[in-house]
Amino acid sequence: MTVAKQTTLRERVTLAGAGVHSNAPVSIVIQPAPINTGIVFLRTGLAGGGERIIEARWDKVSMTELCTVIGRKDDATVATIEHLLAAFSGLGVDNATVEIDGPETPIMDGSSAAFVEAIDQVGLVRQAAARRYIKVLKPVRVEHGGAFSELRPATSGLSLDVEIDFAAGVIGRQQKRVDLTPDVFRRELSRARTFGFLRDVERLTKAGFALGASLENTVALDGERVLNPEGLRYPDEFVRHKMLDAVGDLALAGLPLIARYKSFRGGHKMNVSVLEALFADRSAFAVIDAQPRREAARAEAGFGLRPAMYSEAN
Image 1 (cartoon, rainbow, N blue to C red):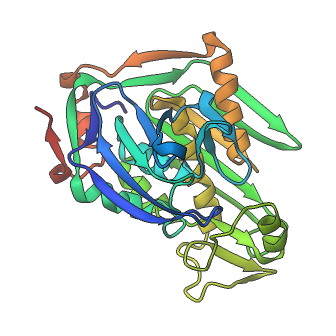
Image 2: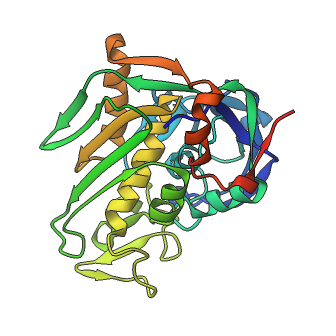
């Protein structure tokens, strides 16, 4: 399924919170952006009042340990971008500028739900340019220690098949498959929260991670117990969150993918690595425009965005 026109937000929207790893307070302003902008971060609040533009692209990634970070450590970075990028990708937002005054995107409730709600409040507009896609032409795969991530050709859209395998019985082996649309993202993935084990807290905090983690933004596990009083939002919330992360990381391709994605025991590093492998082989992909509007009308009608949320850009 391809949608003919690029999109951006109808109006700006502001959110505030703290980073799950840094615990630093941060606010973001998501601004509409012109055609072919893609998703870019405007990092403000730097020393001397400086600011930097950082494109949300695979070749701007500087770290993938526990979260995805873009930018240069010696200049400016933005961490934990995956949940916001997942909201953009899941809802079909092509162009936006994210002004951010701190080093890490706010964790909110540990999922993409707050970002989805904010985008839905202002809605999207179609822009006067065809949407472009990256179409995978042949299989690309990365492996490490029994884990793998791969991209394979597809006729339309992005489908995902994600499997996880944890020794802890409360998680165990879980698998989920979806064809990504805005409705599917909202219903099946957007509310799935990040998770972690109580046994790892001391080690992570000593390393400077998880300083802002709490039961308000993380599913906390102690042995075989879920510590959050409200329990899980989905019986398989763990694999759904890993899939949400994959949607966000794969958005770093820079354009929507037409591909089948599959992973086993993957994570941020392998999600980015499979993009690196894809773009290292020029014969493995092509950049294509969406089909003409009259040919896409039926597909666009079923794209899943609520009709009232769309309007035409002037």
